[in-house]
Length: 306
Ligand code: NAI
Image (cartoon, rainbow, N blue to C red; front, top):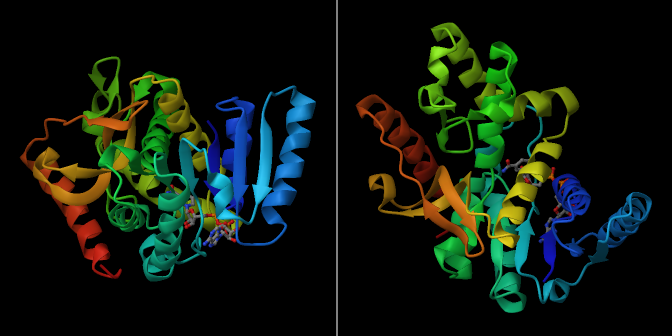
């Protein structure tokens, strides 16, 4: 068993570091098209492992064949947005990259569980799924782990309790039409909405949707540590068959009354991947907002070739 990360850029390298720190696997392979980049990152990461006493070996490669033997493949390859851009504007260019990588994964790691961050992630994971033709449990779009914890973080700052005490809910698209749901988010069985004023709820919803853009505008780069951490808990849950619930973008086949689209929902993670979708009871107003978010993903899907 081994974890391969395709795309040794900022998200790929941070994910490798986080996987290494947490010893999620003993072998990590980084693959990129840029000559020398994955090899350089691998050397640096091996030094870090030697310093920290981590029993993990990292390999860098420009050859897709080196993913052979991987039980988990994480795709972080593609263009990232610049300040002022939306994730949706990356669709056409990144779809081509993702389709090409899908063919390689199908060839060299046909039994793997595949996770992807490439934006717009709900659209790119659909492209990946159609091309890979793997069962839906094994094709997972990243972001729910991040978007939910961003909501928990902003709420925790106001309430003054740990983000880990909050079970946050964010549904739909990873993008401008994301639907954070503080009324359905809980602190030990009590809805977040009972801890916050209407204005505070609106504020944390807005901050959660804007979080990615806020980071991009501040740093001129998009986020990398949050995605690295989120991918780590997902890979760990799969490796250890934890059956923990993490939000992710998965293929809906009738759940929530929706078909043939990937959107963020709570999912049970175990050794088979995204094993089961948890369906929340949404009231009419929540259902309307959820469907708006689903429609936004469907509209964005029209911008990529079938
Ligand atoms: P980056 O530009 O630092 O790294 C991307 C890497 O992909 C580059 O090293 C590039 O050489 C490589 N690459 C391009 N085509 C490739 C191919 N065919 N095979 C292998 N490698 C290839 O970008 P960064 O910041 O790491 O972001 C990566 C992607 O993840 C972007 O699309 C970004 O928008 C997305 N992202 C998604 C998040 C999410 O929550 N879903 C959060 C942060 C980033």
